[in-house]
Amino acid sequence: MSIVITGATGHLGRLVVEALLADGVPAHGIAAVVRDKEKAADLAERGVELRVADYDHPETLAGAFEAGDRVLLVSGNEVGRRVAQHTAVIAAAKAAGVAQLAYTGILGGPDADFDLADEHRATERLILDSGLPYTLLRNGWYTENYTDHLAPVLEHGAVVANAGDGRVASAARADYAAAAAAVLTQDGHLGTAYELSGDTAWSFTEYAAEVARQSGRPIAYTDVPAETHLSILTGAGVPAPFAAILVDVDRAIERGRLAGTSGDLARLIGRPTTPLADTVAEALRRL
Ligand SMILES: NC(=O)c1ccc[n+]([C@@H]2O[C@H](COP(=O)([O-])OP(=O)(O)OC[C@H]3O[C@@H](n4cnc5c(N)ncnc54)[C@H](OP(=O)(O)O)[C@@H]3O)[C@@H](O)[C@H]2O)c1
Image (cartoon, rainbow, N blue to C red; front, side, top):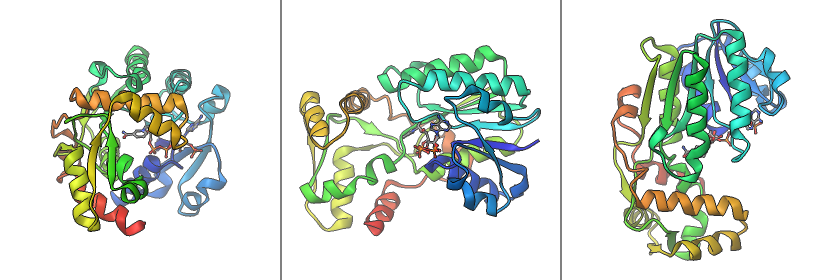
């Protein structure tokens, strides 16, 4: 039996593998499901088992899981394809007889009423219907969704969104990864859904002020109408369908859908979540 991480060459998956190793799980007890072995060469060198599979090719998933494995399904990153992809992964996990299927869903679960949540709601349903022992990790926003894009903010002196006074209880990716590692290594998490988010919800005005404080530059939040935001995003090269999803997310933020602070994440990781200021500082260091 292994702890199996899909999407292990992605940002979150890599951090989960690191968290497992830091928690003392031996490398040979971890299997990384990857599309590209080359991309995971460093993991193999450290003793992590590689299993090659692609969500789009169900036949490749037959070798991804073994009876008794504890599996983390990291949701795919191609919006619109994910229900079919996750269906294939769940079927393979079921056929193998895994002991746990943990899934990285979205904050709010069945109550998340925005476009990006549709595939996560459908996937949760598939998992429940599969009868597999499950753990639902309903992830809120990564702070890095914003701090990875600081260059244009600094250039224009503006944080642009259509989220009004909405607040975001974001946490660092590493916090969500630590939570995933916790539910995969500890007992007592089966049949449970966690609402994972940062301890503190911030507004875009506060975010802009924090970036201004740390960078020493004048930066303000510009709250624009949704249509304006859409054209700014497409003008900057974001494909129209994805830009529409981002605008819809901001509307959801305005409605408070990503502001929940249940405390589940801090409880699972046994420490406070990473403050916004720390992730901003880290991003500014990397610029
Ligand atoms: N909560 C949030 O704020 C937030 C933000 C963005 C995304 N997400 C969701 O959380 C997931 C993890 O986030 P992330 O930052 O780690 O994303 P990421 O860096 O894009 O990683 C996605 C991973 O999924 C793998 N993958 C994609 N399609 C696949 C396929 N057909 N077969 C097998 N593997 C496939 C990728 O493989 P390769 O390495 O081979 O490309 C990659 O390892 C995302 O995929 C998305 O569903 C959440």
